[in-house]
Length: 283
Image 1 (cartoon, rainbow, N blue to C red):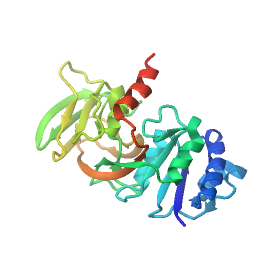
Image 2 (image 1 turned 90 degrees about the horizontal axis):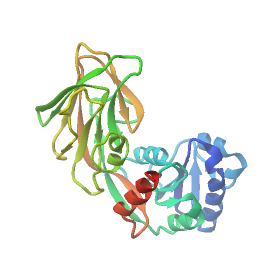
Image 3 (image 1 turned 45 degrees about the vertical axis):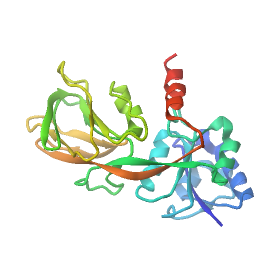
């Protein structure tokens, strides 16, 4: 019997109907579906038929996510470095990483449990010096953000040992191709198509006319430093606080190949997805 690990949206009221359908469709397909007590407590009777385990298994046959991009990223980080495919059904706002929409829930579940999907390998960004229980990898981006109560930040950026920027700003974002449609896009950085070998760095609200986003080769290491005379800045992995970069400190960011495995339906197109997700929001 094959096993699927279930991860759901942080707002349970939006996904409980999907949990009930998952239990039904999965059981009919002969799958064992497991989740944690924390996940189970979100959904009450809707989770009947789903097995409770103390922690998610290390190598299930599938990780099924009922949620938005944040939940899908959490699942990708949970199974980073493994070959577990993450199949997302969008219960969020944009759902750029999702394989199916909630309006096509049963069809999407059928594809997931029938293993009728392709697997796209995604790169990640590693902060090797980071000591963190939740890991050192971001699938979308690594961000350095000025805290709201502090004065403007002053960050330096070195790439392959060469300083390319020393800028007063609100922060800096380093993003993978998958993450280039997130904070980097909102920051007017370039979109990198999935499959592009490289990553992008962009300053947030730079106090200069010359700071431009830069696409970096995957073999080049980025080093971000915080000016000694400034306040600490927050270091974020995929939008979650991971550490604080103290004045005078710096960290390296490394591009890592094939960190995540994202399930996608056959024939899906990155460019169609860009048009449908962001063209719709721009109307």
